Length: 452
Image (cartoon, rainbow, N blue to C red; front, side, top):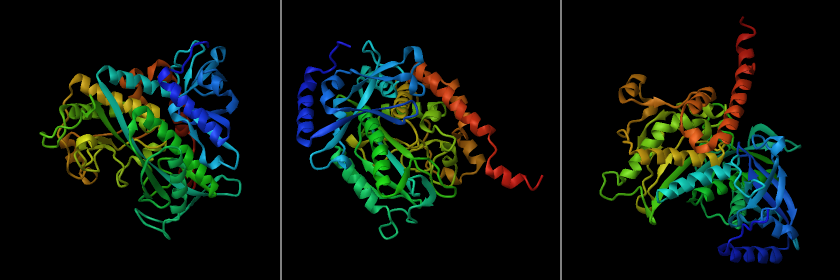
């Protein structure tokens, strides 16, 4: 591990970090990374070890992280991204503070570990760069607040009964969102909006778009901060897609653009929709591949309880310039803000894998020059099955089992995730589906036990 990972361009940034550590009296550094499911992990070291940290000398046991590495090749190292350094505002006291870095995982020889989701996204970014593109992503992650019991465990009681855009006193989450906003702002986020969502106890805080890696880092940080701050109010925040039957679930709409030579490659002022040929090809790539990547963007058994008609979540494969019942829509802003919004992903997805495979699917359409079908501007939710068949509108997978089968049969998953993550992910999701499929649920007992 003698190789230096600090470039000359990062030397100034490192000096700024050292100055902040000294000024804020940061004593502990949390080195964070995610596993294949996107669950945040971290190891904590003292600030005195900063030099070893930035040189990638902090080791951990990869065999103890699900899906990472076998026990006979378990030594892995953490390489921090200096751009992700942040003092944790809820730890700041007089004369004391803690900070964090988000890290990539590397092998003992200094190469990128292929099982690290962050490294998977980096490869997709490099693929786009080879074509002259940079990827911009703006995610929108919804969440629910539930009351917690005296032990801090979540109950089934929602925190409030507010509705879309309702203020206090109906919106009891206003104060919680304010503290989340303050924490995120202190950590470098630019917050664009904060509001109560459609369902009872459901909320959303929007932050500014970023490059694909920065957006995934931000989404990961956001989920962690939301849960941390909620717990300080005696609440449990969940990004579970459909925690309550009969009301809307939580989505993670992904707004994505390609930029080339500093210009938005999706914008064409002369087109009827002001969309470029690249944009149409990107849309075509998403539509072609979506059934083959849904297992990544919608990774849970519970994800498919959200993707049903009647709750604003898309379940039909179509696109439109404005129709919110379509899988893909094009938000109204044009010029530099032109973007494609994919509406099926949910916030339980690993952001690194999700943004990688969404971008890869769209780039597949660009590279192959695919043609997008005609847009669907009718309300698809209220169409008859015959009308959908007439228009050639297909369905997303109806459950995780179907999604896994489609993921295995397609090419986009293996090509984007790489052999290691692909095989580990498929095995993990098959176990999850089989566990659910073979379990006897309360619904079955209630419906059948007395009847038969």
